Amino acid sequence: MKRRFPPETLAGFAATKYLYIRVGDHRLIPIWVVVVSGRVIVRSWNDRADGWYRAFRAQPRGAVRIGKDEIDEISVRAVRVRSTRLNDAADAAYGTKYTTKTNAKYVEGFQAPKTQGNHVGTTP
Image (tube, rainbow, N blue to C red; front, side, top):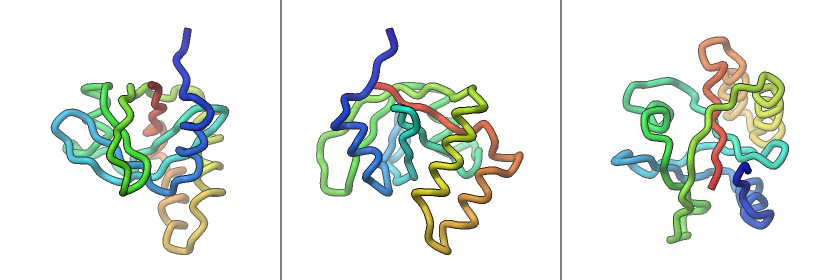
């Protein structure tokens, strides 16, 4: 059985602009997050060797925090999103949620071939 976040936790992910994420010794950093079909999706802008995306690929267990003032972290497991439909829906969700002029280049960049497939779903 697949583990899912409770509805109130999903609502928190959907409402926040920045999710703080950490894996292993990697520092807690803010990243964008969307919720698609009841799944929490995060995406790496790049694939740097020292970035959070590679850290999660190497060690799928980590933690997230919603909001700067929260002290409790939620333990998560990263799962690579392989579904083209879900990847495309995540791209669309980013475009809907992150709409400022500054965000536009990143939203468009997510659709570039070099970043396609860098989506990660998180589960409890």
